[in-house]
Length: 85
Image 1: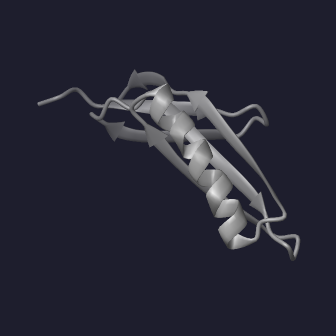
Image 2: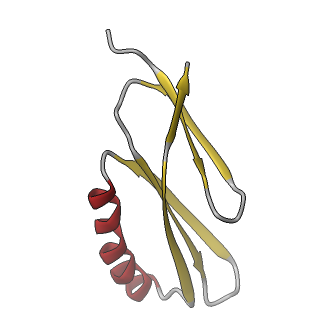
């Protein structure tokens, strides 16, 4: 059985997200903070097994912004740190 760990993402604005315990080899966390036309915000997030996979989400974000009518959005990717479960 694979060893389980906790994964922690710390974003530039100080937000901390902890994932786990998990045995999956995630390496990066991504987050989209979208501002809607009415001024409210929506937050979408996920984790990936590589930086390249996380960066591919950026292209999908541009399409989503146009489709959903977002006033603006911020896309962020940070590396996850591991700690024992």
